[in-house]
Length: 322
Image (cartoon, rainbow, N blue to C red; front, side):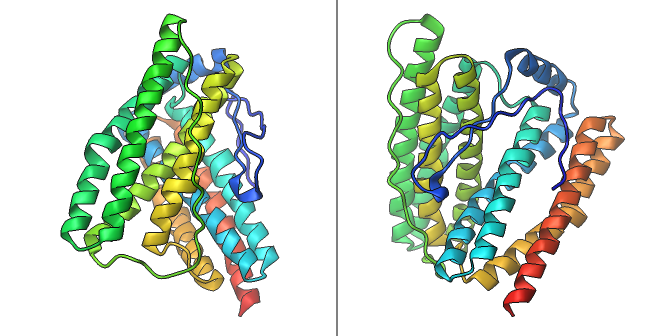
């Protein structure tokens, strides 16, 4: 496994949930002084590089969430070695790739800054994105998707309100940070899409990528809060992260038909990893190098090498199943 060292981020892994392997999350510890240095570095990055890092975080978080579900399906089909491969690769995508992209982009700030960032995201999803998705799904006859989007929009409104309360506590020192929400964990069996309209399918894909990124970011924010001694805020972020992944992402995955047979899941993973290894990340690296963002270019090249290894490992696993 290829590993890179970024001086501005120190990793400490600790369990935030302990129900089942599929519901286990980890926190990344970010020192205060290191975080300040990270933000200073991020401010001088080219805007295109920052956009590419954001795309990376979204894609890698989605890969983590998808591979975790693929691992569960492999277990169902009695392919324990494939399940282990999917879970190990998923952890690399989250614990290394997302973390390192976030460090370069300066994603994590103070507790107050993290809450403001979360509030902005939840407000957009509550007021704009999911309401529009629901209306479009309803117009296209995808009633189940319309109902899910409407339900998630309401959830995001509650998340926003909880974060607003937490921000007042953090900035004034008065009041109590809300308790974390409880996830209604959704099981995701293999199956075809439950929606018919191409627009609904595209909206589900957008939504899943957003929920996966929110899950990853909230784990980082939880780690920041935990290191500053604010365990109540850490619990709020971690609990919300679980809702985004185990309830929202999972519910959307069911409708999208994200999980198929293990052989099909492996083929999908191979295609994605090869594209990242040969096209996406080399392109990001070339762009970053051209504008002088050498650390980002090095990260993109290293990530491309990782993804090539992942594709090869998935291909070997598929070959053994034939």
